[in-house]
Length: 244
Image (cartoon, rainbow, N blue to C red):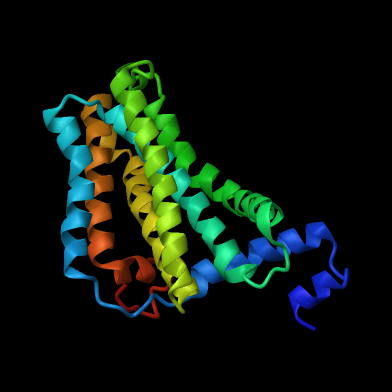
């Protein structure tokens, strides 16, 4: 009897179901191979443009590196939660008997449980740096520009969630696709955290260090966006990988 049938018959308690869903989500994201599809040519330009935009804002439009780091933290947290929700919706609980609002709430809670630790582990250090004593002075939370950028970040993430949800309904490799997106998000942050904890970033001071972290984050976004198999190899160094 599979897990879904056991749950319907009441053999699994609610906490057991939640733990099972979390562990299954983790296995899906870590073990699935990358989708073996070539990167569309139009995506190359969009990947580069999306990652150069924060650099341009910092260099030419006066936005502080600390503000951009804070926005990166929000973007990463939303991306992790979004991917977890899609995993629950399309993979681990795709055959759930729940429907309507109950399904949405249950899957949202499951995604929150599954993503909470990762968000704290990956996003926490970025927020700490952005709000640290020597960097936070450059963050103006009350400025219309920062609030607009933050609102656009949230709206953009919601739009991306809807688009990915629709796209997954037309795909037959949901687990591989979501695994590839998850590894991209984590690999991008890992590179920045490695530089952060090495201490090299702030050798030349807080402001230059924050700017360097922005450049590294965006550079990693371009690298892993154009070569997603490299993100896969970070998790499976002996297994190689394909291209997304």
